[in-house]
Image 1 (spheres, rainbow, N blue to C red):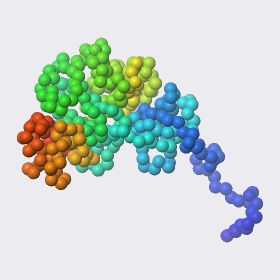
Image 2: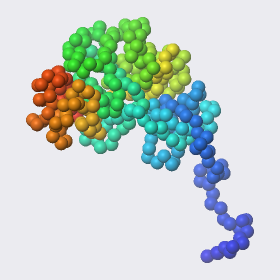
Image 3: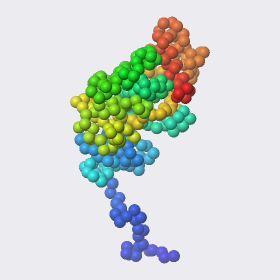
Image 4: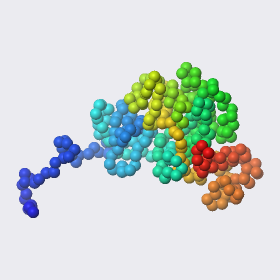
Length: 336
């Protein structure tokens, strides 16, 4: 075996060829202190589309971030080519602290949680009143995920021309949750968008709902065409104007300091990741009554102090019923 001394001739040293091409390797890496701030608009197979000032920049995650992944809504620090030109690729080196997180699991037995959206202020739960029929258990699960993740929920009921909203509203009246009722015609003439928009100005709102409820149609009505062009190349459009969302997509509102995030239609919403003890924080009128609860109380057992708290007149019994219904939905599969 050949051995080299201290004074080797560089020409004698065998170099390993670069399997990935002829492009020379470099140890020069962009400095993190030179990073600029950006907003993640969408994620597609490891490539992230970000908004940096007024430019759309494509980026990938830096290796030093390890398994930590950026999601739509994240504020990130980006280095590299930030021109936004074709075939350029920047690198995300930092992910900012999140103010809220919307998470879900595939089902209640799945230990792996998926972060859907970060830093949203509120969650718009979109449900049709008919065609397809409302799914209260799915709505309940979305509410639990919103409360657990720090988002304020509100309900958007579509297709009111096919069925009245009163029956569904009875289930959620005691939650003091804002709601909007729209019909098919209003989705196209702008009336529905105007009523929904009053809840969106100055806020980041994630839209979630079952497939076929008109969620993406409503989002498209909220975001004007000139704004949609910014990220339109990542929004799949198929057949005669039918919009289908395959990944979460952030879009800016017109004439308002706000964003809407359209998410793919869901068939189920697993809650394996949710700690039931955090849901009580969404019920500030009931939370003081938990001080006398036994340790690790589920708030739905014989020794729960909330029963006495409500009986003494400190809170409405209907609110306690709503809390326990939401807590029970974690133990009950959607659709049961």
